[in-house]
Image (cartoon, rainbow, N blue to C red; front, side, top):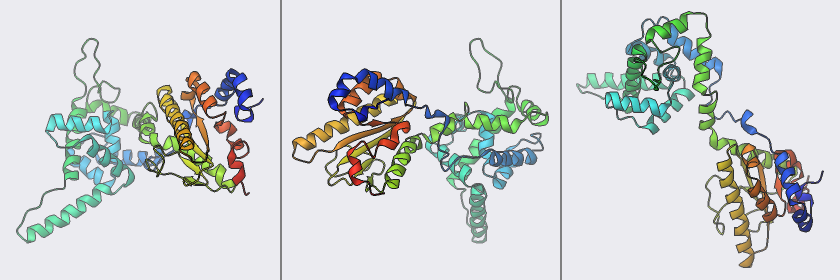
Length: 361
């Protein structure tokens, strides 16, 4: 079956509806695969932190701020386990601390602490060691020293978490459900103890909750990396063909380009082709991506009108979001003369575009 990039402009116009269906049929739903990113915690690491908290609290029977602080010094990832028991996001947890304890922790600060504790298992231990060293020096000099903002904010998060986990969910109200009305927090700390002592895989439950729906929280965290899956695939294709290219950085500004494409072949000074690589599973986001690609085509036309040499605008797209945008796909195929590629057809990008003039391998 022919693809849109294999047709002449007249053939594409006459078979446009067919080519829309062909392109859409080649789209794949990328939601089953996502990049791990630098901050992803694998289950064995999460389980290790859970076991630290379980051991330090004697299976949650000694659930106090001081004991949890000790567990955090042993493994900073205990903070993520504690958050999973609460069943909250970092910003929500911060808001709880601000409301209940008048803490100055912001949503951004909560996210930063969460990430650092996730990335560096001894993050809190190292901070506490520095504070203790400063405290010792200050005592010898007859001076005082304040705890760092990060340690104070962690203290606030722990304090409010202990408070809410111990008390559990309040009495149910018609048509309203409390966030702590969960299997392991409904009746307070007794619920947590039961979940940890009985033969249920409590660490598995918490890990799934930590990932969210599952994996939703992680997906949010790496949302910017999802698009890089297609960018990486395009870059590998160009590299393997020996094509000279310039890959732009995120939000980079290029002289002469109001909108910078993801790739310029061979460069941005005198491009023969530019590529925009996008993946999305949401139709609203897909609309925005299509708009951006069409703006690149409009920008190309303005360049031609101003006397610059013409270049091809190529779209490399995938994800179920584009499947819902049939009219947008029609316009995209027409405006790019069929130069729309998916993961399934990406192997043709170096043979059915002007990029073929730069293939050297």
